[in-house]
Length: 113
Length: 114
Image: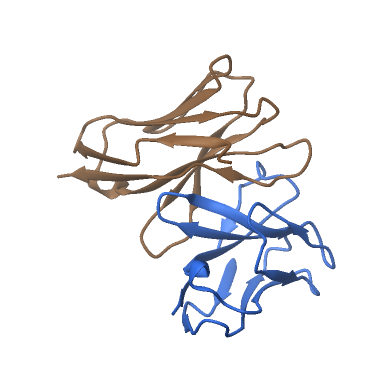
């Protein structure tokens, strides 16, 4: 049972455009929501994360929007660059009872020059 | 500072063979994890450990065993490999909470079972 659903599976964006990846979760006990970025041949790396007590977090060109009532969160990449081409995973965990992350299915982002 | 090191990086096994994947971390992290990554399925937790000498089952533990005899090492074993275990395996480590600097992942082991 996939507790974190991610869409789209793949995304193609032009350089300078906005990339948007969406995730939905089922378990309301989740209290930590990170996004990981993975380049080919590498392990995932933490990109940005949010807790449910805030609705938005921004770090440079990357923004997480969080909707607690809808049990959804999304990653926005502004001014997308070819170097952003990678696979992106959303995830969720219960910080209060351990730190096991449950990952979404992943989104392969391609930014065309 | 090497971070998380996985060996081997690639391996081809015949059905029924056994092997051990080794994960080593040098960050003094308490928690360690083994995930498998399959296309369209994200990363799924196989087993994890919250400290030296402890292990626990994750989401997809069948067909795998683990051991953590030393804090810095976490071993994943396949006793009798099956084609369904063809995957990319990632080891990760973290402090007690994932929000403290996140997980640190290794670069993966690509395993093919024929």
